[in-house]
Figure 1 (cartoon, rainbow, N blue to C red):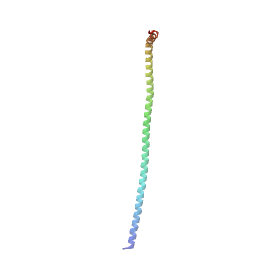
Figure 2 (figure 1 turned 120 degrees about the vertical axis):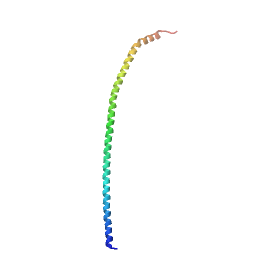
Figure 3 (figure 1 turned 90 degrees about the vertical axis):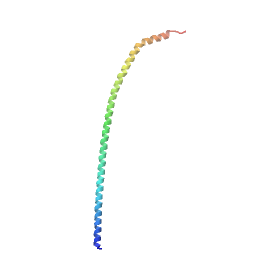
Figure 4 (figure 1 turned 90 degrees about the horizontal axis):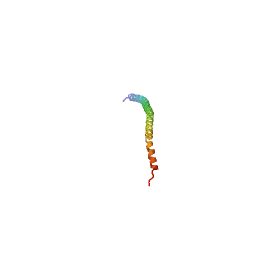
Amino acid sequence: MDPFKGQGGIQMLLTAEQEAQQIVSTARNLKMKRLKQAKEEAASEVALYRSQLEAEHQKKISETSGSSGTTVKQLEEETETKIQNLKKTASRVSLEVVKMLVNYITTVKT
């Protein structure tokens, strides 16, 4: 066995180990960069989705609040119509009610 041959084999193994460590280190760094990039992309997608949902929500709120103003106006008109109908009915029936009350008051039961 040649002592120099054994030294050369060890040196080759050390060199190969260093190269392997550099490859692993480079791969690890690339993986970390990609994870960071993926995290940033996900965050931007979440922000975009959130803004879209917020816009839809605001649109629905504005649609419903706009229609509530119309609903209020419609209810006021219906209420006014009903009040007028009640006043007409009351004025038409009021003479009969007064006659009936006067009749009950003036009639004496014995």
